[in-house]
Amino acid sequence: MANLSKIELTANNNLFELVKAQERETINALIQLEKSKVEAQSTILTAWLAEQKLQMSDFATATLNNSLKGGFSGKAATAATNYLTSIPQPNLQNPIK
Image (cartoon, rainbow, N blue to C red; front, side, top):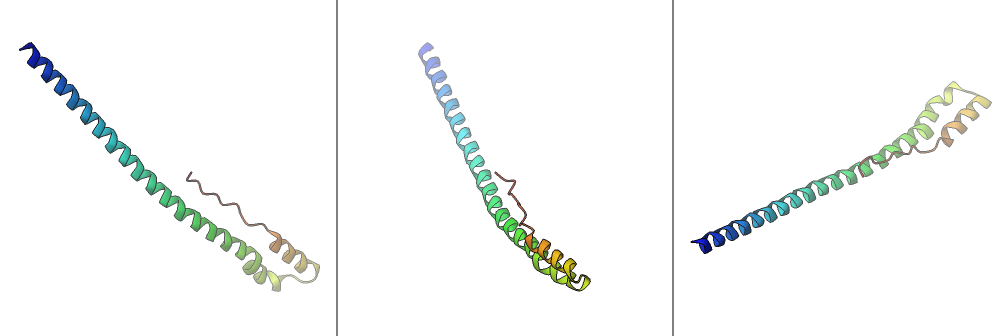
């Protein structure tokens, strides 16, 4: 009888350890799934930010510059054009690391 109890206890402990190992594997798989989702979002956001950076730069150097040409003349027009074309591209960084 005592041997049977020890065998049952050992079997229960082995089963418990097996269940814990399966839970760890499941948790790790879920973590990897979420990491891959975040990485995909990061890639999409990086491309979007690059496009926004180009659009903002184009707006300052071309669109706004052309819109203001009729409003200024002489040195003021030259200064406005020089200023608008010298604006650096914004530094839009991806917040997802």
